[in-house]
Every structure is written in C-alpha cells, then in structure tokens.
Length: 640
Image (tube, rainbow, N blue to C red):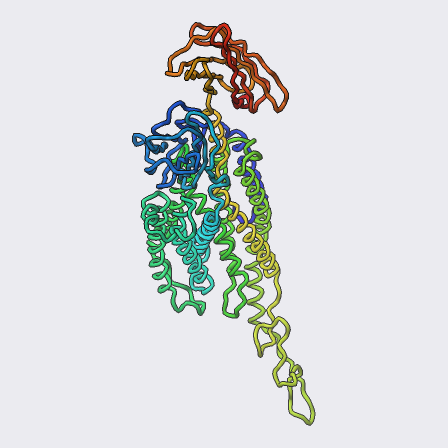
C-alpha cells in the first residue's frame, strides 16, 4: 500500500478477510491428515478370540515412526507379552507390528501405543482384545494428551522461543536491507540481531535434547540419553534441527563480516554499501531457516505437500518480516540518546509498504493453511484446532485495525517531514539577536543566570549553553502517535505468535475428523460371544457361539452355532435367545431363532438402546434335557 491511500488499504484488508471466510466455508472437500490416526488393528478393539494371536498389527492413516516402547501388549496381570519392539509390515510406513509370546493365557489384553506422525508430533492410544473370554485387567495406560507432560510443555515453550528468534533475525535483516541500510551502524539494531541469533541457536539445541523424551513421553533426565540422540539425529525433525544449526553457523559468519564493515560507524557516518552478494545470500539463508520448520511440521504431511511446504515457508518469512520489523521500529522510535539519529520518514514509508506486503502474504498463505487443516465451517467450533484458529483470526483482525492507524500516521509523517525539516533549517540558520541586560555600578550578568552560575536552559532546549529551542512540529506529533500504535502492534503480534505456536502443536481439524471416522469405520462389525454349557453327559462340555451383526442399535442379524467338546458341530432340537437391558428394564426381547439346517438364525432382531445387554441362551439337547446360560454383549449406538 502506498502511504497516502489508507482507504485502499482498508478495502484490501476487508477483501482478504472475506476471502479467508469464503475459503473456510467452501473448503470442506477432500482429506488432509497432518496428524496420523489409527485406522485399524488386528486383532480389533474388543474382539474375543478363541485362540491366541501370534502378533498384533496396527494400521495408521499415514506414515509413522516409533521407538522400542512404541507398542506394548500387556497381559491381564500388567505384564508385557511382546518381547521385541515394533517393526513395519512389508516396508509399509503406516503400519506397526509386534510379535507376541508363544503361549498366552485366557483373559483380556491391553495394547498401548505411542508413535510419531509424519509431521513430527506424537500420538497415542490403547485398545483391548480377549483370548477365550474377557476378564478383569490390571493394565494401566495413560489417558491424557500425548503432549500434556512436563517435557511436552517445556518443548512447546522452547518452540515459541525459536519462532521469536526467527522473527527477530528475519525482521531486523529485512528492515536494514529494504528500509534503512544506515540502521546497521546502530548498536540497538546490531544488538537485536545478535539476540535473535542467540535465541534461535539456544532453542534449537534445547529442541534437539528434548526431542527424544518428547516423542517417547520419557522423563526430562532422558534428554541426555545418548541412544535417544542417535534416534533423533536420524529422524526427520532431528535432521531439520541439525540443518538449522548449520544455517545459523553460516549466518553468524555473514553477520560477523557485516559487523566488520560497519565498525566505527556509530558516530552517525553513512555505512558502507552492502555487497552485491549480500542480499541474495541473506534471502537464501532466510529461506533455508524457514524450510527447516516447513519440512518437519504440518506442511510436510497430508495432501498437496509440494504446494504446502513453500506456502508454509512464505508464511514464516512474512511473519518474521512483519513482527521482527515492528520490534525494530519500536526500538528506533524510542531511542533517547543525543547521538541516536531519528528514523527517517522515508524509511518509515518503505517499512509501511513492506509491512503491508508481509501482512498480505500472511493472510493469503493463512487462508490456504486454514482450508488445508480445518476443511469445514463446523470444525471451527467443534475441534480444538478450529477454536484456537478462531482466536487467532480475531487477534489478527485487531492487529489489522491497529495497523491501519499506524499507516495513517506514517502517511502524514511522510507528508509533513520535508516541510518541517525546511522550517527547522531556516530557523536554525537565522537565530534571533541575543538580548543583554545592562547594569550600572555592577558587572554585567546574564539575566537568566542561576545561583550556581549556569545559564538556564529553556525547557525543551537542545543543549546546555544555548537558548535555541527546537520547535515542536506536526511531524513530531505524528511520530509520537506512530510510536504508540506500533508498540501496540508489537504486543498483539507477540500474542498472535504465541497462538500460532499452540496451533502448530494441535491436531488439525481434518486429522481429528479423519481419525474419528477411521475409528468408527473399523469398529467390530460383528459381535461374537462364545458361551460354554453342560451337554448333559459326564465330562461333556459344549459351547454355543452367538454372532450379532452389526452389534448396534437397530436391526441386527443373529446367527448361533452349537459346538461339541471336541470342536465339532452339534445338532440340537431347540435353541432360544432372549436379550434384556436390565439397567433400563427393557426386555426380554425374543430373537426368534429358526433352524437353518446346521445353525440357528434370525434376521430382524431390533435392539432399541445401546449399552450392556444380557443374553439368556437356552439349549435343549434332548427331549427332556435343556440348560440355560447367560452372557453379556455390548451394543453400540447406530452409526447414523
């Protein structure tokens, strides 16, 4: 935006916001997972098996990584029964399989898993299966968020420090290169650049140390485990962090050489011009640093990765140019030393244009990222990611409103600064004649002398020993107002940056919806219950297997098969099945099984409520012998 056209800037801002809302509304099609989700397992959740399985296999919605303890199978006594760590199945990165011990006793087994999704964030969960018949279990697994640990919270804080360091490093550099090259000679600017570099280096080292316990939910002391360091270095997030350190080392050499060029320039002299290779080299370093984030977080997983990664890079750089540049402007506007030069109005005009361009890029790339990660209007209020995004959008709208006033004061400052400079120059060249009071019989003393013998300096005067007072111009008033609004922008920008850090560690709405759909789609479609019974002869135990499909509220198909003690099929003259929901007082509901020449079946059993239902199974084995056994079955809500 040109400084003189605030209405144009307002119109473009409104248009950008409307575009963002439109994109969020219509962007519901397609799928884009940025956190993996469990899409299936073998054995399935809640399944009762007649014989013990040889292995447990998990399938996820995208590729995952894991450590030695990523998948644990726990016996009813809370003992681990998978002797070896997980491995991929046939080279498929979205699978994990663990072999089980040879002989598993009857009872309920718990599978607890914690893996790292392709975007670098850990996910976890648990399910159960039973061998023979369900039983009580002593296994205890974590039920909270996989990142809600002491290490996870510390890791999130360090990531915020890293983002802040990137903003300072990129913002200061962009301001010096584009807006005011002479600012490179000022100590506050060089100090800010050094602070940004130190923050980014320190946070990157800390992230490398914390990466291991962050992925495995280990204690903070495990950050110094050498085995975890090796695993971190070979993973995608660890490789990105190591590349960031290498780029920061190159940046340190470049900054050192620039400091040598500007050494001795603090007296206000014009600094040497930047070399022809400085700007391209700085741009390449900035792109490389931003790529270390984009290549290992949300943009690196899901659909349109080839487009999402460069969009994320542009988003990060625009954030740094805008927020880091604002902080630089605040420091320069608040300089108070006599030798500190005032920031030129022309530099403020160039920064206003640069900041508007950065905000435009932020809005455009943010629209795409919102569509990719949210996908629907309803997800904005039903998911944690969506609600956090709404807060961020509200904060950005407030920032844009404050930025409107900043650009208005900048435009007026640019218009008034040349005239004010000319007036001040003329006034300083033609000072008024100094009046001297003449006295009789005493030596002449300046009329305004103080008891200490020092001439009084007028309030607001330039320096001691002069009566010349710098006039207050409209440009000074605009500069003060600009200083206030830019300071508010900085505070709001820091808030937006904090919200962004939270977003990058939150499961995106599309991934949450996809995981829920996958989990619902892979629920057991058939409820199978096997109940033993006495067949009426000595040492002869039979069993009846009842299958309910799909085992949900509504119409179900029931099939019942009777087995002898040796596992063969048994023929019985009558088989009855009734179901009762004892908690709600519903039933008994007769399934009305009919003989299908080898098994018994009913195809129209309707169950009205979810929950635990009691099955009463009556098996008549002869004209006079019959037995009734009981078992429970869980009926889930209808998928519709």
